[in-house]
Image (tube, rainbow, N blue to C red):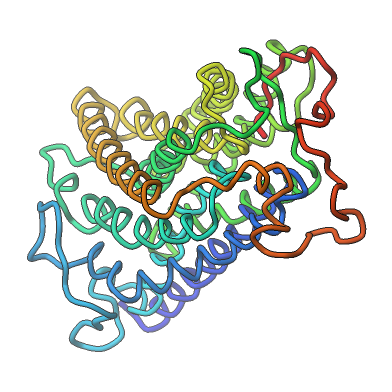
Length: 432
């Protein structure tokens, strides 16, 4: 490889790192906008700590677990030692010689933190901060790199007769976070006032503008998330991935919009926002393999699925304030299956491999997260007190308000004192 090509590849990968990093701002903005104002600081705090936790744990051991080297090809676990062990020959990466070792680490490290960020929104407004921090360290530091190694580190799923395929992480990143979130929601329970007398009580977020900004930041960041996963600056491959990513996002918005209008008889912005994210998650597993029609179909289906999933989870009384399960778990599974249905890898054998990967990653991630949440529940406790939840986590966990001019004590009355601001009798579930 020429020095000029090496530099170009490395620069593109660093730009992709910057874009993926900005996604954490998108998650923070989206989640805080879809939560009540009294919990804003808590959500911003978690989303500020998660990238820090992800990078440190990935540097200390996670990178060596996820990419342990060729000696562990086809295995379920590998480990090449603590710390960042630069390969012989200098800073050129042993995993991909198109860019430096340091660029490789930082790009993969940015992905690592995303799994815990997904969990953050799903358990918002009632989880103990300390317990969530402990969960994040262990989930990002142990669960994520192990399942990542199964595919991206040359492990078992990559060595199937027809290898499991997940280009940028519909399963390995998004559904891993979704399974962790589901386990947490089951053990935490729903927010006070969400399900009363068998009825669903929508709890609106405090800032749709913040949520909308967050989604567009995430869409921007996905250009690095998927575009960087080409692992080079190859103009044809990168351009194709960016186009297919955007088409799926656009189709997801349309799918979410039209189905929500049919079901709810209104133009619901939250369903459009989640439809965009659904399309992005859905295309992530096969963005390098799809054509224009494939990408649009994948996005449309994902946009419709996210609406149906929000309704289903509400009926099951699984309280997800931001729709993380609907977006990341349901559409992560759909996107992974879509690899076997569309594009260059379509076929029965590929579908079987995709199902094996979905099943293995799902079973391990859910079991790991459930046991971890349960241990935390019986030791530290994972849910705040009723008073803390009603007053808001900001004042109890952080001793401050996000909006001090309006958030004087008692500004937001508890659900025991008044109904939510949604009109009484509304039956429309909202992804908040």
